[in-house]
Length: 76
Image (cartoon, rainbow, N blue to C red; front, side, top):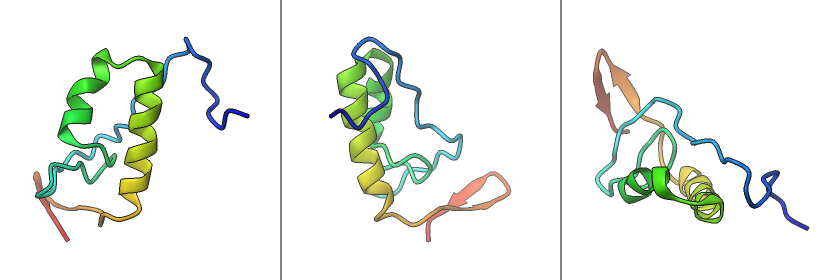
């Protein structure tokens, strides 16, 4: 049984939460995607996007949320 609600040709929405701040490993503290995954998202097909989502969700469990001061992001 497929755990994802997306069919093979259904669009997968970006996990971007508009809280972009990359850590020292180029992982966004907002969505958990790597810089490479963010850049690849626009051309990725459904299967690739689902894989990116899976990896980003796993990453988010291990990264601290960013702290914002005015327009600057400070890592915890």
